[in-house]
Image (tube, rainbow, N blue to C red; front, side, top):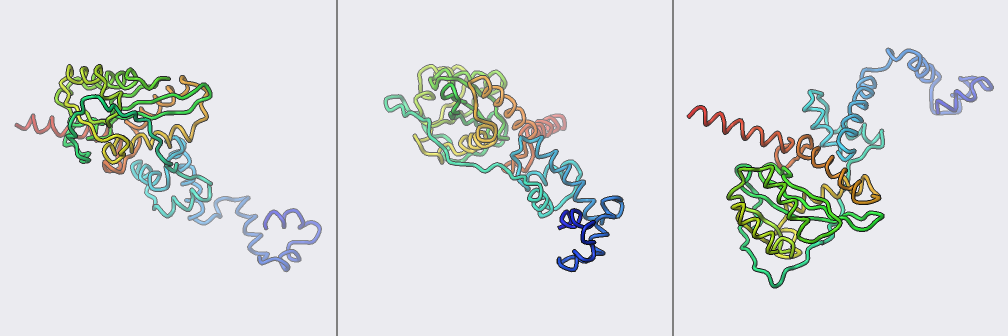
Length: 299
């Protein structure tokens, strides 16, 4: 409406145009005065403009996947107080939206003839400390050169991704390499429960032997049942939404590997997870180790 008056004011005059439109001439003149002098803007508009810059920064710094709730929590962590309804309103004005998760496609191939470890978890994905319980699973990513598979090993205590690997093959080497990374990064993991589904990769002789060598206790749910490995499914769902759907299509394995590396680092050290109190996994683990050290020194 303002632009219409700007375009025709010289020909018809502001008052004549406003007489035909639902706007008073004083409103138009005040609008133009605010354009010339931003100091005349109401405090709420000034505040909204400042917040829009901060919202866009947080949104871009977090892979453009955060919705209003996560953006607000991150702003509050940075001592920028703001209400969720305000963030929702401003994100709507800016056309920003969080990532929306889609359906899960199965990659599990059952190992009917393999020995089956007992289910030591029974759908209770909780841990009282790091290296008490790990969950493992893998998914696929479609690329222009074929399908690429991504495997993860996750520490349940803080949802910290301790191992991951990208491969063009879904054979046992994929999940074994992710396990090796997890064992290397967590040297004090003896006795950890390692839970997976009953896929052939996780029940292969090489994989089970490596778990035994590391002193890990194998556990397995049922095939094709997301509830029996729900926490791993949740993290993979986030990966699929926040990396695959938001940043594809992929040309090949190398871009997927680099994007996964970026995402895992962000997920572990900066992503706010509601399930652990809206803090990053690394922050929760650091708090645990500080508390443990403090208790040991006090004793």
